[in-house]
Structure formats: structure tokens, C-alpha cells
Length: 305
Image 1 (tube, rainbow, N blue to C red):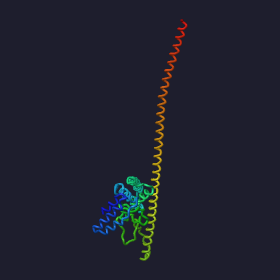
Image 2: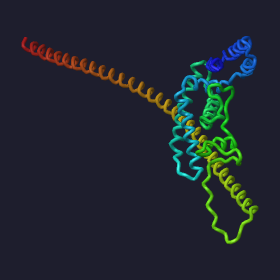
Image 3: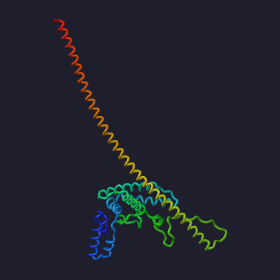
Image 4: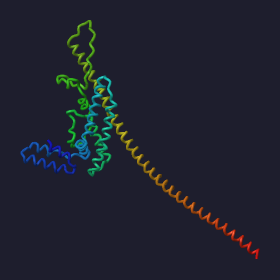
């Protein structure tokens, strides 16, 4: 509903009044059920509101994050299926998109009169990382209409997000699988006949083993994702520290340049003063020579008298 979308585009301080007004309008028009749904919408926290603004105001970088998350998830699924996959490229693209959106979020908060504090930014990054993990999945939270922060999906939820196979989905009559498995190798022809019960038992045991192996592999991938997320956070912290150090260095450089300019000006003034003193010294020396010659002439004239 377009009117509901407009609620989430508004400044945070206007949300409640606009929501109640829309609910009253819907109720007056006879759409009581929709009016109740709108009135039940909670006011988003500041961090979720900021992520909504990124969706509505900066859709291109927002979509780039979701696309990078989708590529990373597909690459993980390919790797878990036992095939070679490039995880580094989509992971780096995801990190860059997160960093860019974090900068935009901080600017959005400051531009709207809200502080971009560490806790708020941490919640924003966590929500963005979670949305990148969900990407375009049907169970993804509604980007642009968030009413709360989003946590990364847990193990079971993440398992459901991994692509199932080329057919587009699992057979509802079979147990759910995390990834498409390779076809089981054919057993060598046995010399004795296997009973149907034994064959069923073997198939069930093999299926359970493959599911256990797949869950173990997926758990390792989840841990790798968490480690990568932690590493990204550490890199952002290091970048912030480096930026602060660079800023302090620039201040020190500016101070040194200021002192150098003052010293240069003082040196120029000293050189000019030295030239003036030298000029006066030359004039004094010339006056002394003139005086000595005058004394010599006066003595000579005195002798001649």
C-alpha cells in the first residue's frame, strides 16, 4: 500500500501522528481491517528508521548490497555442494557496500538532527548485514518498512535460505535438505540378496549421514560468515582509528607549517634589519673617513700658518 510506504519515508518524529491519521482515514472509508493493521504498526527505533531511509533515498547502493549478499550466499552453497566457488569477490563487494551505506546512514542521521552514536551505527550495520544475508529471499524482512532492528538469521533459518537445486525447490514429500547432494555411488553387486527392510535401513542410514555432513558443512560456513563479519567490524574500527590518526597528523602538519611560516617571516625580517644595519655601518665608516681627512687637512693648514 503506497500510503503505508509514505509513513516510513517521513521524519521519525512525524511517524506516529501520520500513522494514526492514516488509520483514521482508512476506518472512515470503511476499510476497518486495514485501518487496524496500520494502527498496530510500531514506531521504528532510530536505527531501523535510518535503514528505511537508505532503502527509500539510496536504492542503488542498497540494491548493490542485497545483490552482493545473494552472490555470496550462492557461492557458499556451491562450495558446500563440493564445487569450486569464489567467495572472496562477493564478500569484498558486500564489505564495500556495507561501508558505503554506513557512511550514508551517518550522514542521513546528522542531516535529520539525530546523533550517529556508536550503538546506533552498530544496530544499523547489524541490520544491513542481516538483510544482505536474506537478500531477495521470500522470508526476508520488508526493506523500507522495518519497525525493528533485524538480527542475522540463525542456523535453521540460514539453512532454509541456501538454494536447493535447479528444480526451484524441494519435494514436499521428502525431508528438507540444505544443499543439493551428489547422486549416491552405486553399490557393487552383492552375491547375496538384500532384504527390502535391510535396503531401506541402509538408505535411511545413508540419508541421515549425508544430512549430518551437510549440516556440519553449513555450520562451518555460518561460522566463517560470522568470522568474516567480525573481521569486517575490526577493519571498520581500524579504519576509524587510522582516519582519526590521519586527522591528528594533518593538524600537527598544519601547526608545523604555521610555525615554519612564522619562522620564515622572522628570518626575512632579520635579513632586512641586517641589511639596514649594514647600510648604516657603511655610512658611519664613510663619515669616519671623511672626518679623518678633514682632521688631516686642518693639521696641514695649521703647520703652514
